[in-house]
Structures are given as C-alpha cells and as structure tokens.
Image (tube, rainbow, N blue to C red):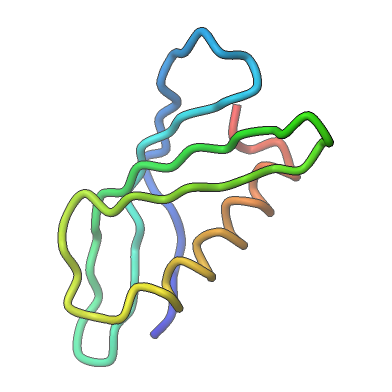
Amino acid sequence: MKVLGLNNIIREEGVIYYRKCFTANAEIELPLKTINTPISFTIEMSPLGEKAIDIVFLETIDYPLLPILKILKEIIKQQDYEGKLL
C-alpha cells in the first residue's frame, strides 16, 4: 500500500479562524489496483499551538484504514508546513 498524493484540494470557507476544512481526492496504490477516493479533512489549531488533523473517507475502501490514515496525516501535515494548503 502506498499513498501517491492528494489531488484537487479545495478549501471550504469557514468562520472559525483556527479551523481549516478541505476536500480532496486521495490517490492510493493498493496491492491489486490504484484508486482515487474522495476525502474530507480538517486542520484545527489547539490553544497550545498543536495541530489536530481529522480525515473522513467519503467512500468505502476495501483495505485497512489505519495505515492509510497515518500516511495521509503525514502528507497533510507536510503540505500545511510548506504552505501549500491555503
């Protein structure tokens, strides 16, 4: 299993300044095929400066979600650090 990246990232408008909501397509390479699945994720800043990332899959995936979630959170955290998620 390998996450190839996030495509079509769209930021949703919100009124809470410390919470950013996005939708995107996650490109995931599974052992038998490569899939594009829609996801929704939020990045929320805590009062102590820590960022919490929550991911919701909008379609079901026939693969264990924990390894995919772990890699997606790392990718999202890296893209946010680099300023690619505006």
